Image 1 (tube, rainbow, N blue to C red):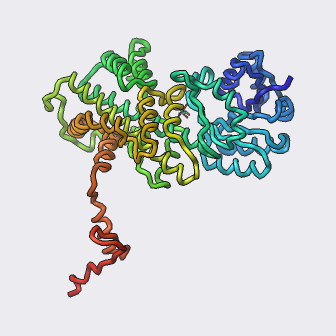
Image 2: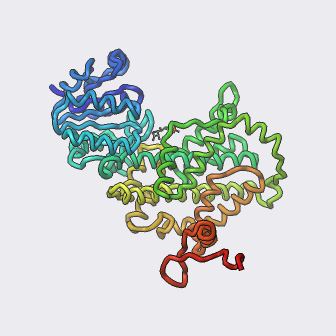
Image 3: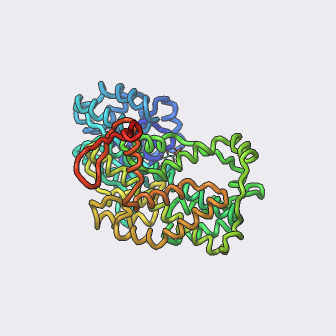
Length: 472
Ligand code: 6PG
């Protein structure tokens, strides 16, 4: 009997996805470039539905048609190499699926290349880490819709379920799935940075202990902030090793694998402000300048205030941080979805934002209760310019904005950098300013470069001889 699907690449994500499919009753062929890994997997995690294979040909021949070949290898060159090796082995209409964190432009290129050879290619974003892959990830598929119909059942079965619905929905053509996953990761960076800022404010400005912080985050997880990242933050805060809090001895240098950087490069390319996500990326860059920051602390002196100077109690401060975190979180999602809406036009995709929010509700790292509200808001006001303008979120922001403003002001005066929260506030203030300062920019551009400007009192494009009066 032939296998229903095959997985190539048996590292953590690939192996767990294969196990997930096998658990769901599918016969899964498995293959790995270093073939001893196949035997090791069979020894350690062998599943009755696994068919181990030791050459690509044996692997391909073991699959029912149209073949469904899931690549779970490192993004970049390894994907291209594998595709080249598969081309002579597969038949027309077979489907190659890339489930890695691939760059969406590579996915667009590969789709086109394989289409010329009448081979289908799907670019699928998968989120949820090891646990998600094993028991239910969020799945973001992009590519040919008909080819996807051969995968829909498997994907929906293995994916996480939230509120009874599968966290998997066909998104759009070619690179759409990997694009949405990339934006998911950008939002993930922002979410994490915002939580880290809330933590540092509560610790450094108000002096809460780790035990108290654990309780605060636990409480927040029963509110509008309820989410996976808040939950694990609360858990992290109570972990001790040799009687010391593990968090307190973790080096404050954050690493990254690159998807957050892609989101930012892409936003710059499309001219979209995703400042909260950018602040999160910059936060990681700056965190790595540990030695320089140690010097900086000595060299740059700052007169900073303490919480006592603000006439505000500790409990009230917790409330401010909570509201500021929530509003900033809304802004980071608003920026992520704005990027998606611009990308949709740029790359000819057809997104349904309400459905994308639904996919994010379970399995993935950014899963959160308020994604229900995002999904509802986009359903009600599908063509809205910005998530912040929907009735629900405008109200959420309006009732808490003063708190965000007050908190950022306290942070500034306390000398505690909260770049993501500050960026969120500035994004809101920029968005609610009908008269910006760009008239000055346009005047300057026209002054030094005759770049012309539009006027508010009449139509057309104008240049003014700014130096005429100087010449006279
Ligand atoms: C997910 C995550 C995952 C991500 C890593 C780390 O959705 O499961 O986004 O895909 O790659 O968690 O990413 P960084 O190393 O860039 O922080």
